[in-house]
Length: 163
Image 1 (cartoon, rainbow, N blue to C red):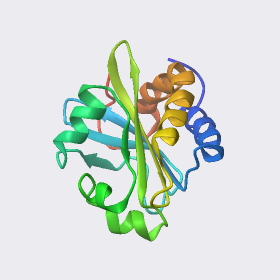
Image 2 (image 1 turned 180 degrees about the vertical axis):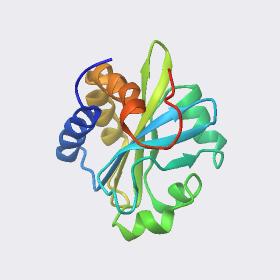
Image 3 (image 1 turned 30 degrees about the vertical axis):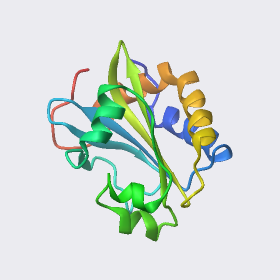
Image 4 (image 1 turned 90 degrees about the vertical axis):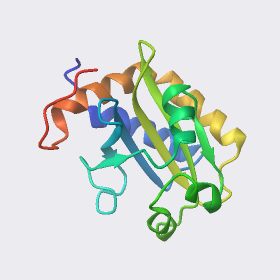
């Protein structure tokens, strides 16, 4: 494990992705396979999306299959596509967002976390997905370490998770 604060890696990739493809709302979610939940370990909007909160992903098997099982990025370009996957569409839209890109971060063939980029409806295209995926891939080792290290930092009242 590194000595660096894990939020530095997440802030760095957030800053990069804000330039291209653009991001209004950004979260980093630690994948907890034993309980099939995502724990928020970084957020650009801590009031609306607090650190340590856990999000069940039982709502969409298609999302799980794409992002977790196949370890592929996910694109929902509009509110209709968002509503098929996420239950908090009203909150997302209240922040000016209507499109999402989710990118899994892996280490040793295992998903350790997912980055969520949200922007205005129609803003994200296949090109946006490709640009974001390349940036995340270039930082994947640093991001994977940050996800693992977040188990020791982000308060949840639960025991740390070992990957």
